[in-house]
Length: 93
Image (cartoon, rainbow, N blue to C red):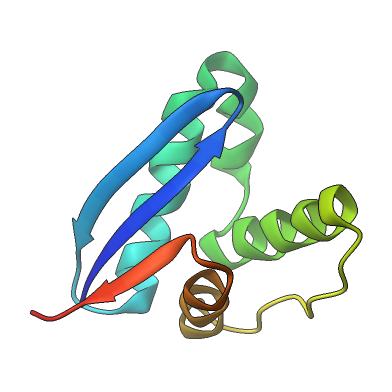
């Protein structure tokens, strides 16, 4: 699986292409990247599972945008929601 992630987090622009074996691998990479971008503020992410991170990200997105997307129940759902919202582009391999 190959995706392009384009978003802004904590005032930083992220525009990266990620390649992984599946959506779970991609989500793990995204979580790691976000933790790195947040610096010491990202330390709390290390205690979260990748799916827990995805669910928290959707919760925060909903709060910030007055929306009500359901928390993803899998990494694949998270990638699909990201694609729907325009943050993720699923690329051909």
